Amino acid sequence: MLGLCLIAAGPEVAAASPPDLANVLIDPPSADFQAVPNGGSGKFGPQDADAIASNSTDGAAAKQRLTKDQFTRGYEKGWVQQSTGLVLVEGAYEFKLNSGARDYFSASKSGDSSNSDFKGFFDTPGLSPAYGAHFKSSDGFPSDAVVFVKGNLNLVVVMGNRSGVDSSRVLAQAKAQFSSAPANTLPQPGASSSASGVNPLALGIFTGAVLVVAVLASVVALFLRRRTPGQAAAAAAPPLTLSGDGRYWWDGGGWHDTENSVPPGVQRSPDGAYWYDGSRWRLVPGWQPRP
Image (tube, rainbow, N blue to C red; front, side):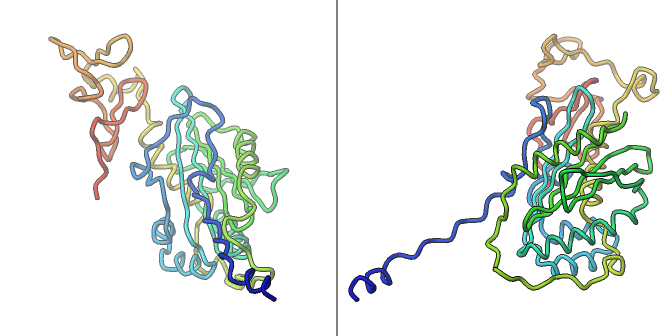
């Protein structure tokens, strides 16, 4: 009897904290990808329901669906491979229950197939439930996405490149992401209520891959509209002289450190965060996003 009392009075085991979604997302397939800063162009970093709903054609309906499916939080990361112009975007979207993640996945697939940039599905052997989707933006920029579910997570991997995308490479990254992700990020009850029953097309939601492709488009604007010698804009740009290591720029009379100042007249990204040195985009020294 005393032993039972001692057991009952013992300390409770604290529930494990949910993993950081930033750490759930895996690294790019090679080390030559440059990360896009969180909070900068593309809005990478933590994602709440309002941020996700803002990418829908009907924000109110999108938020209604996220609430219905018990969305809790999300996270997105983006990278650019400078040598090839390949953009990689990954997203993890957490739901309270596995059933909510699967229900939202179904709505995502229906919504993505209705998007004007959608060009068709491709197979995703080795992943289920999952779908692959080809997209091409109105200005001709192609991208491929793989959207899949693991436990209570919706996971998305997108690659885009002006010269085209190898869907097998996107699928390989998605499989690596699936293997790395935890079985669940939140404890699941033995029997959960279904979150289904809402017609995804009636809500007009474009989520999942379309959400990430919308983010991808802003990165494309920053990193992939590269000037070539034949373009008039490039011809009109003032000449830029950099030191052999690319660290310093020449003003005609002296050298200046690119980590402290930006050459005058160079091309800048729409938000002013990056400047173009003729071969790659660089973060403007001291740049901070607007609050």
